[in-house]
Length: 350
Image 1: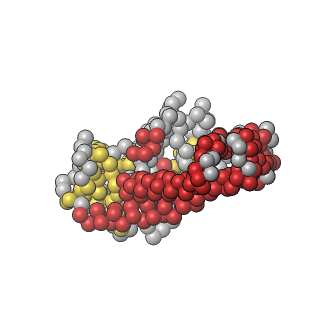
Image 2 (image 1 turned 30 degrees about the vertical axis):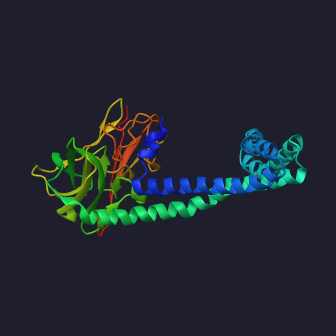
């Protein structure tokens, strides 16, 4: 189970700061609104009644939402959505305002005062929700600006990744792929992004750590895996990463032709799953369900992680294991200036 602390730590620091400032401003605004709302009730000697109604607002919201959700869950199919929205626009307002009026009367206030308190409470609940959208946009814009500023100040240093494995592979149609596994040193805390000639800067959306680029480069924890068409030639990556102290650094990794001879690529099928000699990004791989007639043209991309897989592994797992039967696996590697390279590896018949 994902904890709240892990979710918060995954938010980029500038975005987190904007959200913290937004939450503080909301609390300050709510304080002054409630203070202004309370003043006439204090003057009339009804502050206790006002407090009783105001404290009941959140429980009333919970009751109204529980009624809407509880009834809509009793309906299946698309009708459940219609029931949900229908009750949200009819029953929920009746419960919300009606219960405020009842509690106001029980507390010694007029029904109109209960309606007024209900309206102000609803505004206090909805205003931050509407303001959260521009706040989120501002947070991501600030993070993008800070990332650009940091990129220019990154310290150029020796690579924090060492080449652990490399190979040349021939696809069934004869195209050649190069593979590299760059193992991260223990001091690498995160991989922020990289520059990939001739594509330029590669960053994840929202200032998140680097995940993958196209069908060529991906991250498994802090390690990097490269699956590169030989026809695209050699190039040099500039990787931006943070050390244990959080300092941003930059170093270069060379994509070059491995010294070994090319070998035909083959899939190794076992009872546990399938193993390929390359680890491209998950987006480059797809699987096929077995068909009675042996037809494997319907492939499903690996857009969902299996329960046993690490959410920090954005590469094709080795081995790839699935809870569903897998009749074959396919690769689709983009190729600059040409058609994508595709290879299919059906599971042998038992």
